[in-house]
Length: 346
Image (cartoon, rainbow, N blue to C red; front, side, top):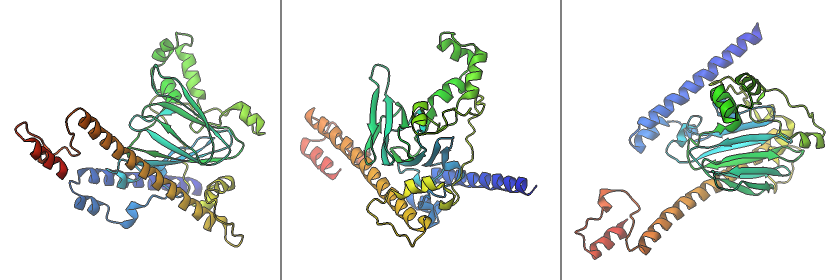
């Protein structure tokens, strides 16, 4: 009885928190000036996102193979207009972040701990499949809209951080969406009618929730259970991820905590300080530094694109303004000297 009441109270609190975030996002969308924006973000803490204690809606995936936690507009409203989002992922041994795509952003993914990760990406029809084995300290780029995955090849947990160039990058899980979201007869016809609609529904019933447990060969090599757990019955328009919530660092499995703590490679271990109060904090600092580097890289890339666009214009005999404003609009009647002055002002 008590547990039922506690579960109900948690659901109500989660729903209320989601409504508060949605209201804040709407108010930010309605803000027409920075002054109004900061009036909505009235608390200094509105500019801080806690990956170790995130809002429930931030846990984008939490299957049998790991957890993905995302800071984006719906979970971190301060990002609205910042053109960036970040996901921190923890994959268990041999786990698979199943093939998916981000329709509104490229992804730059940095691998922080673990042994090795197999990544694959298929950008579009007519382009080759791109596959790499990535080690800790390396990063891999997935183009916007490309179908890609990450498979942990090792017997250790993996920690990675992904940066996006859009505060709402979006995610589509390919198999789950194709099998469970589209009409069964359309799926059957797409597969050459090799499976009936009933068989398609049966396949959908066995699809795992992302993150999946991954390759059977890896699980056997690492001494893990080689049977693949059945996923929940995924009916159309019902992608219900389990409510995973990291309420406190000590609530994370010890193996995951060790994976996070390894981020602080240069920090000496302190036997007198508990893991959750020392090495875990250093891990957060490491994640913050990685996030900052990725954000700067995205800003630099944007600047290079603008510079390159202007240079191409110069080579074609015309200048391209940095700002789309009437103040910098060139009129055909302007002389070349006046044009130069206008662009110098830009």
